[in-house]
Length: 47
Image 1 (cartoon, rainbow, N blue to C red):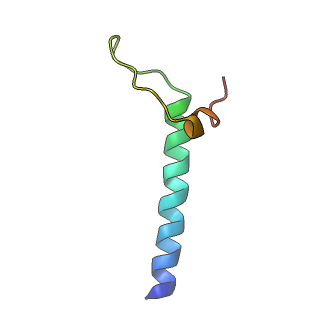
Image 2: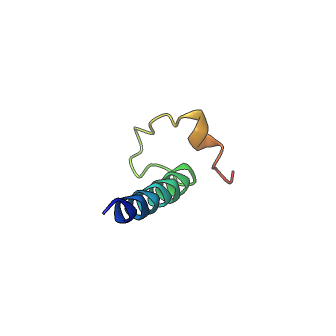
């Protein structure tokens, strides 16, 4: 059970990193609101 939990947590962490990188490289669809990104997320940006 512990081994499965470790694998699952690794998958969730990888998914969170991919989603953060995607969000830092995209603009907000709303014209009025673009929330501030943390400095760590800005480092993942390609721009």
